[in-house]
Length: 338
Image 1 (cartoon, rainbow, N blue to C red):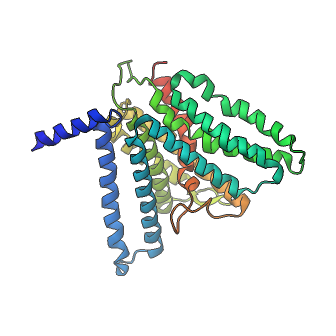
Image 2: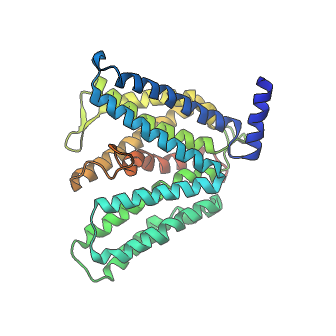
Image 3: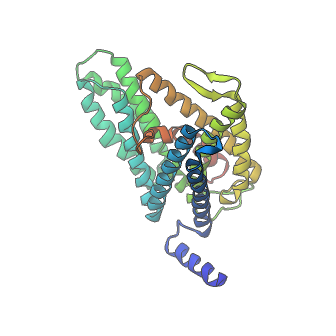
């Protein structure tokens, strides 16, 4: 029976080259962890006499629903191999960009600029990503250089000068965070990965994307937990009163240990995976704090509604948006052959 099961897994992996045995094992590990966490959440929600804060349990269960939804969407995208992964992130970018722009109202003079942002620059960025690492010189500068110059010029042509700098900066920030930064996650698929020492890493690069997403999401959850347990010094109370320096440090350590245990899914040695996780944690914290500042400025609680009673998609991926480009460039520089 074990031999038959292994043979069936190898058949699936052969038919879907992006879904190697390691990738399938990683996905199975995530699903198992979510399943156990969901059972715990169900038991807690039915036992009010345990002295647990039911509001906290409710938030915990809503977060798990979001993670289940994200896992399902990612798995469907991965089933369609490379084009599916790129299309998945393009859709998420478009959705997040829409939430960002909706959260920060625009003027009539911005509409044609926004047309270019949504229907030209966003898809073109992901087309370049889909074409592979050979187009790195193009997709690495297209938005921060050409799109950033185009946006104020096209907005000026509309003839509306009221809050001109504010409007242009808002659109540029939205495109940079929601599209350019996030697009570096699927760009990992194009890297010719090697381990330390230069040995080729001939395994599915999809596991590296899963690793990035899992670590970014875990770091935020662990930071929140450590802040509640040991938090003393709030980072910026007027921006986000629940984020503390102790939470960030605790998350960096625990996320690093988890990443080291998951190093088998990456080209990193365990200590390298831990260091990469610490960097991801720091960037994820920066993303959460940045979106908190934007929401405070706009007077909103959430960027949108992903599932009933929970925040929008941008609230769920702000950590990934900030971590993805740094993770990508560190991986490209130290663990790939150009």
